[in-house]
Image 1 (tube, rainbow, N blue to C red):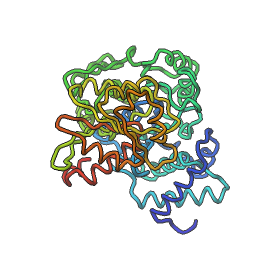
Image 2 (cartoon, one colour; image 1 turned 90 degrees about the vertical axis):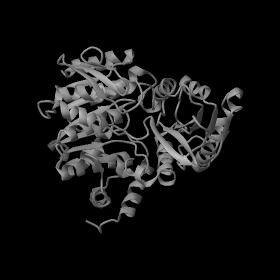
Image 3 (tube, helix red, strand yellow; image 1 turned 90 degrees about the horizontal axis):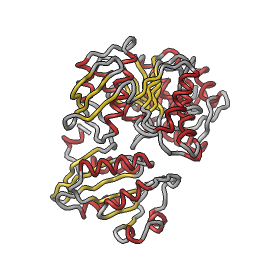
Image 4 (cartoon, helix red, strand yellow; image 1 turned 45 degrees about the vertical axis):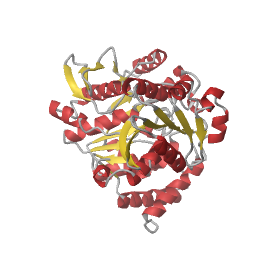
Length: 442
């Protein structure tokens, strides 16, 4: 093995993997895992696919399993600011020393055997290496895109979860809901139970047929279990067993989060023989669910005034529709100041114009990523009546400063369009506007 990398060298090596762009297929990941001794075969894995809600379901499972005393790993994507956020065990992300050590091992292995894994293949491998090394009890593994040919699909899980399916990444997954569902259904394994949200009718027969073909017992939201909003900040869960859990805590905002919490609890019901979770751990775990930049509200001090900032990583049609509904439900009396930036390959659909119509003023911007749409071009594509209350600037710093200056009492600054954008704004808010005692919480 070569000399151990520093954290900076490890991050640079991984960033260089971006040159290999998106590559579908499992061969490279399987080959490198075999060389590592197939660590994935020694772990209890919960595999999650879907268009929206994967991270929220995973975060809920992580909090509850952790509260029940299980050492639980969680691999998610994308990250907001630092790549090590993708790798969690209970309430901590991967340490710099572990990251540098694992990247050194992986880089040496890939080089010796002549492989060029992509960025996402590398992060998948690093997650499985770390979780095995740390001896976790359970692993929550989130797909990156699709399912069938996603690098994470090298595992045989003890349970598969498929969250809401909608249009996204159509150039890779197909132009219809049925085609996208077929790709997501790739994580379903023979005789392994599947939990599915099933809220889009076109997707249900695709998932059901795959489950039937593979003898995978299917638990469907609305048929086999359900969840409904109850008192503010709570929900009721009606389980697969027929039991009801009433007024459970729900910290994540939005009606769709009721469904996501229901999926997590249905999964735990099916996993009870392996991971028995008492009721008090469910309640205390749900009290600790934290998933940044998903309708996350921060209140910060700027120029002697308090400003409310809502961060939401909505980046596809269904996500933006959920954001619009959340704004109408929870912030109907607030003047909306919108900061928006999206990747150039995204098609937001009618929901995007619903959001722009709801905003009193709009600021278009972008991060440093070359994948982002140019704000000036996005501005030019808008209808004249929306352009009349829209501006654009090239940097996130300029956009945030302009909207923070403009915000008045009762206003709401909303940042959306990309998790990378909201992550950057969140970092700026925490470092520049929040008091030190609040930073420790966030």
